[in-house]
Image (cartoon, rainbow over all chains, first blue to last red; front, side, top):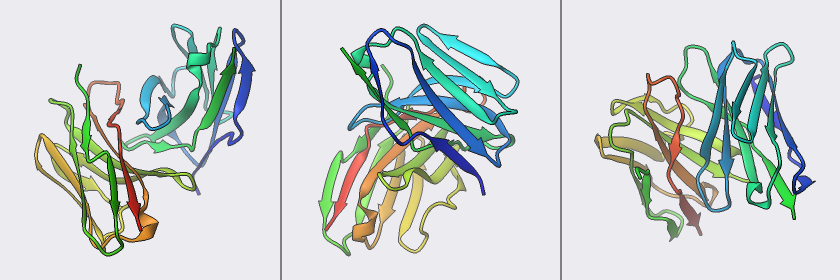
Length: 112
Length: 115
């Protein structure tokens, strides 16, 4: 069956370090993968999209990689700040579909 | 600043009552999604509309849930009768298919508690 896995344990890091979050999937042929940020009591907010034929995407302090051989996406936040503390969700959309399937998210806590 | 709006933000009701949640998508968006989020299951798709037509509601319990888009500015999700297991946060999201990004814009959610 199709499965998306994100680390359920919170990631604790020190301010200024690079945070790296992982999204693994099985039994998918994703056309693209998205990352969203969710703060408590709010809806998810779109951050980045990467397509199957792209290896890497950047936006300011954010970087996403996509390895369809490993079936994995890595999400990096460089020079992390306490304001980056949130839950980060990955979402996969298969080719021919427009409906993403979301992972359960990983909580990031950046300590000052 | 265009946003998806949802009402009510919070709803507490008793088992067996009807619940109606409303969503106003961003003007010009042609897709609307309804999701349910719980700690146990995460974010689950309930329904998907494109150009107001329901294209996917396979994730929705049909016996008690219904979703409609009476017009382009309003999407509704109804639960009748509600049960305690329906307690969750319900999100509406809209998007613009065909613009390459396929990103979704989420509303603030409706937190539903069924006693």
